Each structure stands twice: as structure tokens, then as C-alpha cells.
Length: 508
Ligand SMILES: C[S@@+](CC[C@H](N)C(=O)[O-])C[C@H]1O[C@@H](n2cnc3c(N)ncnc32)[C@H](O)[C@@H]1O
Image 1 (cartoon, rainbow, N blue to C red):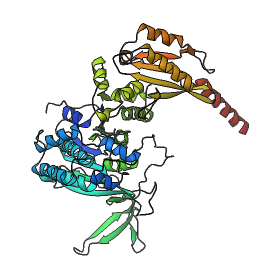
Image 2: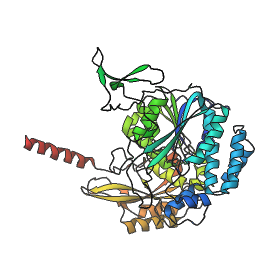
Image 3: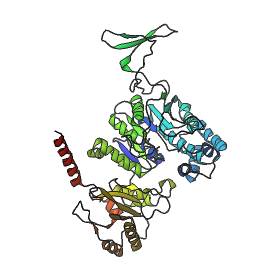
Image 4: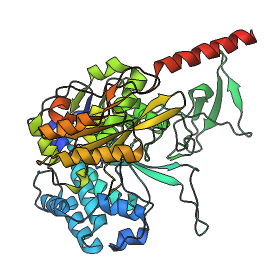
């Protein structure tokens, strides 16, 4: 397919289907785990019956992601006409059959999208490779059909339906608590050729009261069981633990206070990925997660000395991952990874700004703000009237108080002084410390004048003055210009450290 071998740990920003096709070579991946978005909290009947009139915000989130649109129509055609030579007869017949049963709506859009991506994942897996698809009971039965069509028709094998149980979160009084996800585990080949470190992620072996525990000459405790049929006796050492069953009840979902939490709503616990990665890969193997969210798979892969490739379609994810990697492995670590897909020049920035893809709504704004603010800003997700605010960062202005830095992004071709006046208005209205207008096009002289007239900002913690309203161009951001304002005050940190030292002194 002409892809070059990927030699560095790589993070890709963009649609995984395009990226896998363009960059990932055949049979290069040892383990792939994916956790695609689905929004299962939506009313199941609505999903199944394609009822368009959604009644909750959550339902909306599902249709936002999965609508029967040009993308789905093209995807459907691509599968039916086997455009990429990857689909088996069963996969094609399955998608045609599903289109009759489900009609052309959001659920079929989801299954078309998954079929296209899983077919590529099958292509890139090594013969010894494994695939784990994380989903839930809302769609797992359909996905199993899709997976069977792609894997089992070509010698692959269904290995497990792992039921991951947890207890956190609300419960209805009208049914049993829906407290599990489903992880479908397939291997590219049958005949047990795949990597499977049976005790790589062993769980403790419990000893029943009726079982006898013996001790060998080295002092290790063991338990013996005799196979009734063969009469053979097997010895199990307790310190080796045992292989987990296909229901996992010992890993909880992350609660709000969990120190692992990064504020990413669908973040999965590291323990879950650790079990999968340790079992289905060895050190230096290559792990792929093409829906990587806040980067749980890649953070765990890195910690366990695996190579990794991550992909996500939103820049917010990329930004959280970069922060996560920096905080866990240090600033220099980022120099060792390859970041692909973010605009590198004006043509790339323009292409992102003018992409006509609903899934990429506001992506240009997000990329611009997060890149310029060194991933410090928070994106304003509100749709419709955003009151002129695309993002916000908080700057410390007194020992106890913070003010906003407001970001507003203009991707249009006609920039005018009104935009600067509007932002001045927003800064006043919000009593913000500063405002930053990011523009794709060069600002006009009246715009620069209006910005200067906004005056300057100075906090009581820092003698340095900063322009109250700043215009930054995309060209400057591409050239490496970044927000260079101390957000938290070091003077304060020192003061705190000193006061705690004093306290220690007093206690002594
Ligand atoms: C459920 S989250 C994954 C969470 C992840 N397992 C974690 O622990 O953080 C799904 C992610 O898939 C991304 N995504 C959705 N469609 C995509 C696509 N076509 N290509 C790449 N990423 C996509 C979303 O932006 C989202 O971050």
C-alpha cells in the first residue's frame, strides 16, 4: 500500500480511516485496542428505530456523531463494491442485510463506520496480532456480527467476550443496574498462534476452605487439583496467581475524585488497559489505539515499554494526551514522539479551517487556541451564541483570585475592526484580564490600532505589563509563537513553601 514503516511512537490528529490507510502498513501491529464513541445512555428504542426526534442532550450527542450522511453513503458504497479489496462476501452481505433491517439511520451509520475501520485494523494486524473492541450491550451484538464477518471468514478467531463490571454511577428502579461494558477479543489467526501471556496479568488465586494447601521444599504454597477424566494431578502455585476469567469484577471505573481522572468523560482506567496490554503483547511490540481519547492506551503502553501509535479526530484529545505524556514522562519525552496531522503551514491551516465535515465542527478554533495556549485553555463547547468566547484560560491576579484570558478565533477571509471592538466589549463584560484574537488572515491597520487602544493589563503579583487585547495570526502560531504570560505566580508558590517550612519549624 506504499506506507512507510513507522519507527517512532506516533500520535496522529485526524480521521483514523484516512490515517490508517495512508500511514499504517500491512501486518505491522501486534495489538489493537479501540473504544469508539457510542453514547449508550441514549434510549435504545430510539437507536434501533431511528427515531429522529431526539429528546435529550445525550441523544443529540449520539446523532451528532452518527448520522446517515454523505460519509455513511460513501462508506456503504465502498463496502458493497469492495473498493479497498478488504471486505469478505459475508461482510458485504451483512451490511446489505443490516441496511434492510435497520433502515438507513444513525445505527447503520455507526456500523458502516465500524466495518470500514475494523477491516483496516484486520489488514494492519500481524498474523500473531490481537484485537480488542470495547463497547457495551447496546451495540455489542451487532459488532460481533461485523467482527465475525471480517475475522472469522479469513482464519481469524473469536476468543472472548469480556464482561467488564463496575458499580459506580446511577441505577434505574425499573430494571437491573446496567453496570457492565463488553470487550470483544479476536485474533487475526486461529490455531492459538497469537501472543497470550497467560499469567502476564494474573489475578490472585483464591483458595476455597475445602481445598488443601501444600508447601513444597522451597516453602512455596500450592494447591493440587485432580482432573476427574484423566486422573492427572495439577499443581498450582498460589504466588503465581491465576489467569483472569472473562468477567472482570476487580477493576472499578474512575470516580470523580480518582487521581487518574483527567476530566475526559469516557476515560478508561489504566488497570483495564494494563491487563489487556500485558496479556496480549510483549515489550517492544507495537500497540495501536485509533480512538485514543485522553490517551489511556498509549500512556500504559509507554509505561510497559511497548511502542505505540495513537489517533484521534479532535485536537482536544491530542492536547490532553500531550499534557498527560509530559506530566507522566517529562517535557523531553515529547521530543521523542512524532506528531502528525496538525497544520504545519498556512495551506494546512486553511484546509482545516474550511473543512466541510460536521465531525470537525470548531476543530480549527480548538487547534489554534490549544496550540497557542500551550494546551492551557479550556474550549468553549457551547453551540450557537458563544458570546464571543471560543476558549478561556485562567490567570492568577491576586494571591486568592483568578481572571479569565479570553480567546476568540476568526477563520473567515474578511477581518475587520468590528471584531476587535466586539472582543473589547467581551473583555469588559466578563471583567477579563486579557483577550486574544487569533486570526487566519493578517489584521488590518485599524484593527491593530483598536487593539492598542485597549491598553494594558498588570496583576498585583507581577510588575510586567501585558497588552489587554492582543491580535495573534495563525502564521505567527505556525512560526512557534506561544502565549507567554505567567499564569500562576511563582512568588506565591515560594511564599507558600516558606510558610509551610515555618510551620514545620514550629512543630519541631
Ligand atoms: C470513547 S473515547 C475513547 C476514550 C479512551 N479509551 C480513553 O481512555 O481516554 C472515543 C474517542 O474517539 C475519537 N474519535 C471518534 N471518531 C474518530 C475517528 N473517526 N477517528 C479518530 N478518532 C475518533 C473521539 O474524538 C474520542 O476521543
